[in-house]
Image (cartoon, rainbow, N blue to C red; front, side):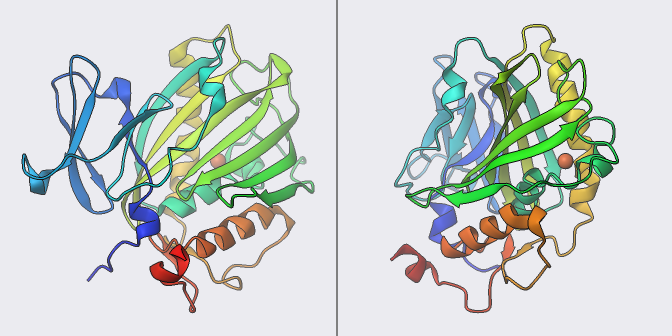
Length: 298
Ligand SMILES: [Fe+2]
């Protein structure tokens, strides 16, 4: 038996796919939180989505086109999708890297995206290299409205920080978690370190232990080809995928004592606490004294 999905998750916007991956008049099916949905893009670029079980009956699901992707909700969102202002900067390269099915919970995928300590060992000679293995101290905070976890001042030496990089350098990172199952990182752009590249992971929970991970980038890079940029990110993610799929338990434990924490894990600790305080259970192993959806909403 599966438990009912809590409103904190139902009332979120969840990604379906890049708008460009939905061809006009060619409906596609997606699974979200165990429910099968259909989505159809019209010739006028409007998108409709519905539960296939309702086919033609009942109201359609709400839709937003956000960051070039199609988002929907099975509940009633009280907010718009989280802002990514860089999406609108005219000189950025918007790179749609596609979606990957991964046998892992959405929170585990987000947590891995926030983790610098694995760079030298998983992305060897690209995002990290020995002996540069130390995660230096950084700051973590939760935004005033509690909507985001933010980690600032993260620094890591990277031999090939991006396709555009000509040499290794100490890259500065900012991480945002503006959604229980999405994260956005900002890292010094190799061609112009005064600006940041933006890389996002949008995880759609198919089930509690399976996701579709969509990768999206808004880069400062005038030289590389779209296909080269997309393939670079796909190569990075293909290194993460087996690591993600080997994690046990697949759901993210929210009990503070569940997995030992060191400084490198500071952002994970904040992320887990934030999930708990928001009453997010789907994809997690909740704390013993878990907040009921009613308490969390109060
Ligand atoms: Fe990674």
